Length: 148
Image (cartoon, rainbow, N blue to C red; front, side, top):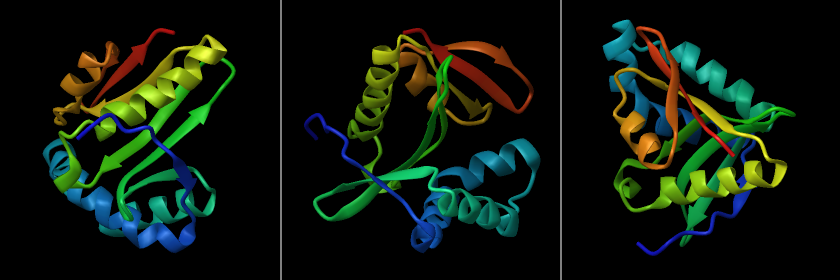
């Protein structure tokens, strides 16, 4: 796939089922590795709350939803809260393009980009390739930052 220039659209409560299905498809295995179980009701409630609050943005390509990302701009940094890519669309440069777009927003403000990734999730290597470094770790998570 050629480089994608993300065009984000805000995701609303009407997309809560899509967010849950995408989160489950991409994260359930990693969550179960870390905590031993998947709390579908809790995850569904969290994502519905985030959707209701307008925290998520979606990326559509050729009429298909391929990505959902929640990020926040703070005075001191930009925080990527959650990012899910449709499994059949992974490893095609979509995530790298989305992260590059968020990094460019942070660069204009001259602030770093921060995120956290589950310790069981190989996405840590993806983020390291994009210039992120682990700043702290717990048994469950790695906290990462990319300087501006």
